Length: 180
Ligand code: AMP
Image (tube, rainbow, N blue to C red; front, side, top):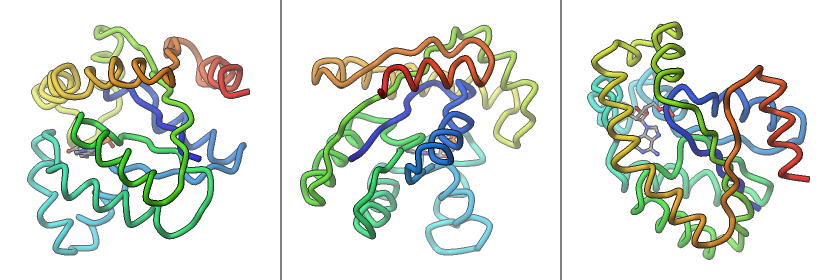
């Protein structure tokens, strides 16, 4: 089974994904973490990804989809995808991967947080790709390339919109009530 957590940068996807994977035993796949790890370990993939990571732009679809396909092919478990898919092409790739691996795409959780709150959160987080200019770039990429996935998945009747404003535990319990 596959669950996706979707939302703008700074919506709390990573935090919620860590809680869900710890408490429910889901296998957390964060493409951002995988790409940052690849960069740290100086692999060819990491070197290719580095300039996109630093600029806050999207790593090419084929690279990211291959990374996810490799992970999903390794075991049959409940996967939680955090930060993937981010484009319609990636969503199509994921559909093909799930069919190939016999995995059901069960839920897409959209964490909804207003832009002004996102800006405040990202300014506080202090990651290297959280500089104001890069934050704005990442938000506009989200609006242009990732937001259309909300319609893509609501057309497939698997999207749940979750209010992402509140404490970590408040948002977590909203997610749990949808999953159960
Ligand atoms: P995240 O940790 O999810 O905020 O991702 C950090 C950065 O990793 C993004 O700004 C992109 O450069 C890259 N990245 C992560 N996931 C993807 C993806 N699905 N497609 C393209 N680039 C990605």
